[in-house]
Length: 447
Ligand SMILES: *[C@@H]1O[C@H](CO)[C@@H](O)[C@H](O)[C@H]1NC(C)=O
Ligand SMILES: *[C@@H]1O[C@H](CO)[C@@H](O)[C@H](O)[C@H]1NC(C)=O
Ligand SMILES: *[C@@H]1O[C@H](CO)[C@@H](O)[C@H](O)[C@H]1NC(C)=O
Ligand SMILES: *[C@@H]1O[C@H](CO)[C@@H](O)[C@H](O)[C@H]1NC(C)=O
Ligand SMILES: *[C@@H]1O[C@H](CO)[C@@H](O)[C@H](O)[C@H]1NC(C)=O
Image (cartoon, rainbow, N blue to C red; front, side):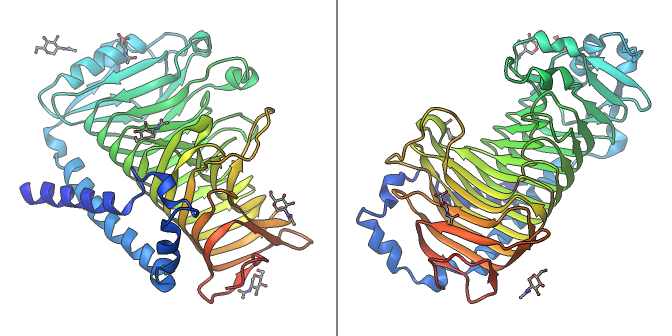
């Protein structure tokens, strides 16, 4: 036990030293004295995408071992099963089963034996807003085999969640069942009301979410907030393409998270990663329709935001609005750093590769401002497929805080159907394509 913990602590220290957390963005402003130091770094070391990729692999190898040991510790035979049906849940299509769920939870969470909270299969349970709060006395699993559905009257409520799990350690949710947010009424009134996310995990550590179908959320489907050590896998997330703000998986203030082997089709970002998140590994994802994989938006309302150490490896995007995107507001600060997008296939994607450092999404004027969220050390490796628009690569960096060290390594994008593609790139310090085939090419950057 001790050596494991120790190596994990070391890992955290290692990770912290390579991230941009806590770095004041003013220190890396090109007009400051640091400009020359950065510029004189050996370009081959700074830019080698393989170096960055290997660093990521090492990190996540260690992290996965840690996750494996802590979450799988228990043997099934020592579990007590706590079935919601034994606490009065009716699953008759009209009864509110919330109280039965709450009573079953209190029993399971309070049990000194490892327990399974069971939602049986072939049944649909209607529940209202509910929070499942820990810490629990022992590690536990929630097995959702049937369907849990939201009442549409929930719509009158002002809270921002439907089902929330919070303050849990060594916790797992799985089972092959369905979580249905019943979101139509929210979508119709989307501008006028506060919206709920379907499933929120807040303040959790050593968490696994595996094999679930989450659909028709009121707003975002799955949120990980303030969590450490998370593995989300084999998830199916579906909502109509036209449903507003229905992000698939949203990651905020979360460290050490792996999202893998999942299929996401919604009306907004398939996966969005925002402030306070680092060590994110996203692999084997099918995305679309939706808005793609997004880092940001960051820096809204002049805020200071950080995201670092993100590996996106193996994504198939079809018919999405964006492919892989980094989106930051002018006037913000902080940084987005150490980001790798690799092995990405695009099919008819409107903005396949996009850095938008001048993001502006409202009517009030978005004038050029002095500060911006720094975007640096970003690698695009083995990206191919088709663009639905002419500008297949858009690296729109800020005048005042340019992007630093952006690598396009082995990229081939062509136009869906007839027509040309081009790249539109501005304000990048340290652009490289490592001598590989890159098409379309940024016109102002030669190497
Ligand atoms: C947990 O158990 C303790 C004593 O065993 C009891 O006092 C407490 O009310 C229980 N809590 C819940 C939420 O059931
Ligand atoms: C969680 O639910 C309980 C019972 O409904 C409520 O008393 C409590 O305030 C809720 N906590 C949060 C953080 O929403
Ligand atoms: C961004 O995340 C960091 C780290 O969690 C936090 O300290 C900071 O307050 C957050 N910033 C904003 C604007 O929420
Ligand atoms: C780039 O993609 C196009 C369209 O798929 C293909 O015809 C072409 O051979 C590719 N070029 C390279 C160098 O891979
Ligand atoms: C490139 O992008 C900039 C900023 O969005 C825009 O103003 C400009 O018109 C674009 N240029 C081309 C050739 O598309």
